[in-house]
Structure formats: structure tokens, C-alpha cells
Image (cartoon, rainbow, N blue to C red; front, side, top):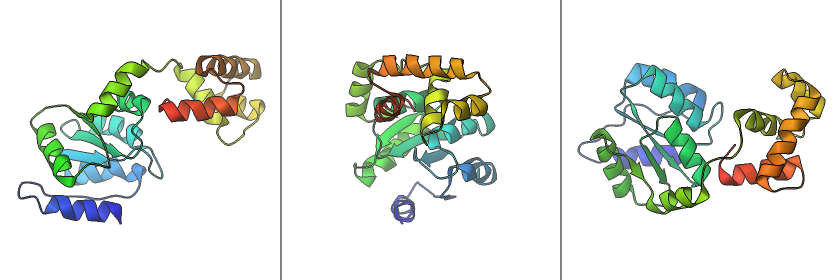
Length: 190
């Protein structure tokens, strides 16, 4: 419903045409390859594939398409990951649709558009301290998997998984891996 309403509102702008809508992250690239949009407006948490992963895929497979992230999850870590994935903008959903339309226009002009409060928070938060492998180990822990399950999934030894999880726990300042998962998610690092 939200996606449809947003598309309807943006479609009322005289210089904006909505050429595709999808409800799953794993449908984004296919739709972009078919519709060839100038701008893709993505959320972060989508079924099938995250908007951040889809943004990186669009950068590689549809390089002329500019990506704007529009989300309720205004976390500094998400902003950093979005920019690393090639997004040219990051906005939170609580703004007026006129601001979103203007952000789309700015993206088309080659400008970067970032919610000012989130940009300030991202600068003060600093970079993600977790390595890719620590993020993998934490991500594999989300459903309460055992060390052996995580090791099998990541093709690592159990001792290596314990080391990555221990390091992640230390870097997040938490007491155990579930707290580390929660802290990393709150920062947008996972």
C-alpha cells in the first residue's frame, strides 16, 4: 500500500514518471533491466534481498540508474553501507513527498542527497568497526544457530567462528553474540 501510494504521489509530479514497482528485493535488478529507470527508489529491508544489496547489483548491472534509499531505518551504518553500494541519496520516510520529488531531481542532476540529521549522526558515529568476516559470523548467528552450524554455513572451523564472534562482541561492547547482533543491527552494521 505504501509503495502504491508513493508511486501515485510521485506520478502526479509533471516531470516524474514511475516506470516500475516491485515488492521484493530480488526483483529489483530484473525490473530495472526491463524498465531502464533513471532513478531507483529502494527501501533497505525487503523480502528476498536487502535494498542495500540490490543497490550494489544495480551499480554493476544498470550503471546509468541512480539509486536513492528511502527508509524508516535512518541508521548511520546503513547510510555508510548505502554509499558504499553506490547509492547517491539516503532519505528517511518521514519527510514530505515534495522533498522526495526534489531529491529525485537532484539525483538526476548528479547531486548527492542525504538527510542532514542522518549525515551528522553518521559522521559522529565513525566507521563500522566490524570486518566482513565478523559481520558474516554475526549474521549467521541471527537465528540462534550453533557454532557448528555457523562454521558449516561459512565454511570455517569452529575455533575461527568463535574468534570472529569474540572479536565482534568486543568491538560492540556487548556480553554475548545475541547482544552483539542486536547492537550491530541498531548501528546498521548488519
